[in-house]
Amino acid sequence: MQIPAYLVIGTPTSGRRGVVWDAVERGSMEGEFSVVFVSAGEKPSDFDAAIAGADNAGIVKYSDAADAAEKLGALDPRKISRVFYLADSTKSLADEIESFKGLASGGKIRLARIWSVVDCSMAEKFPKQTAKYVDMLSHFADCVLLSRRSGASGRSVEELKAQWEKMRRPHVVEYVDKNFRTKNPIELLIDEARRISMFFDEFDPVDELELDAENLPEEPFSLERKPDPYLARLPGGMRADPVENPAQYALKARMMENEK
Image (cartoon, rainbow, N blue to C red; front, top):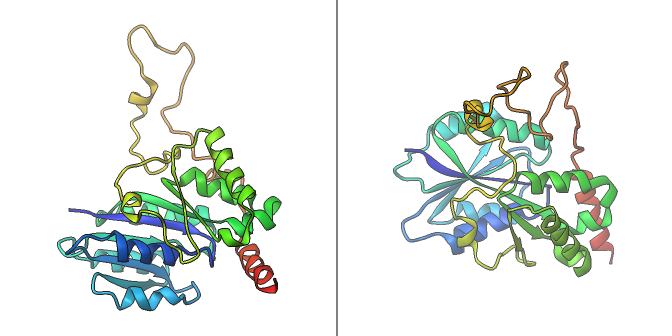
C-alpha cells in the first residue's frame, strides 16, 4: 500500500505552503490526514504553524534526500492519506525532480500529481531571466497554480495561459488568490496525470516502438528512452541545457512590490 504524494515545485515566496494549507484545510475529507514535507533550507512561512497545529495534518522538516527517504519510510500508510512534498526551492529544480523520483521508487509513496506554483509577479518583472524556468514548471506540471497575481498585470497572466494553450499543454491551470486559496482544492487532488513529461512514467521500449511483422525498421534502433529535455546530461555529467534557479528574482519581485 503506497501513499499518494503531491510534488509541489516553485520559487521561494511563490505561496507553495499557502496552497498546500488550503488543500489541507478545505480539500480534506473527514478522517484524512496529510503530511507536509518541507526542506530545512526553506525560510519559515506563516503557514508552517497552521499546518503543524492542524488536527488533520503534520509538518516534517528534511535536511536532504537521504533524510527525506528515512522519514518517508517511517510513515504508516494506514494512517496517512497523502503526502505533500515541497521540493527545496533553493536548489536546482532538475536535481530536485530527479531526487523525488528516487524517493518515489523507494516504494512507500507514489506520485499522484505535480503542482507547479508560478510567481506571476516575478515572471512579469523578469521575463528574460525566468522564462525558461516558468516553462519548466509547466513542462512537469499536472496542475499549474498562478500565484502572486496582485503584483502582475491581468494581461501578462492571461498571456501565460494563452501561451500554454497554444502549446497544447494538458495541465490544469488555476488561479491563486491573495490568501493563497484556489477555487476548488479538491479538484487539484484528483489522482490523474496531465503532464507532458514522461520522466515518472513506466517505460516499455518495445511497446513504444509499436513493432509488428509489417512495420520493422531497416536501420539499427535504440531501445533507450530519450532523456527529458530539462534533465538531459552531457557525457561528463553536466546538464545539457541547465535552467537557472530564479530565487533571487522572486525575492527582488517582493522588494519591488513593497516599494509601491
